[in-house]
Length: 197
Image (tube, rainbow, N blue to C red; front, side, top):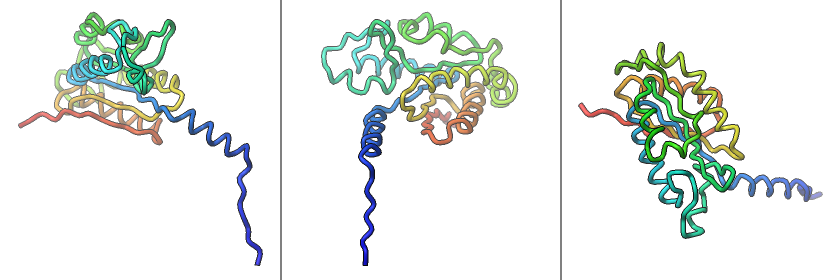
């Protein structure tokens, strides 16, 4: 009886190992939708920036090499050693987005990644999902797609939003369904705030 043995060509092993090493650092696109999601997201970026030694302008000011480990999970490295959050900020009214842009960490974000409407959802899920939100969801998807395409090895998306208002719940669920269609093989992690009775 002959023993059959499968031998993998060396070039295939090298290619597989190169792919593994190349994808060992997985990137996450962070999305924050609505007032609640943007308030949570703003604090998230303050904490993550501090942990990695990145100042509000995106410059590295850390004092340990450990701070640079894993920095590419949430940040893109731009020219001049500047770190830019891999974030998309969306709201159906411009007020909060404008205040984040004018705040201490506003200049750290990519200016094209601020997406806002003009009228708001008025605490109404249907307006966020079917009318006002539906008007900007294609532009919002383009911004998310641009961030995802700039990744070497996209792991997935994280979304911060509320389930009790209009924008976070309506536009948030619309965006989740669109992203699931387009990126069905990627992780979708949501940080959903549920109002208490």
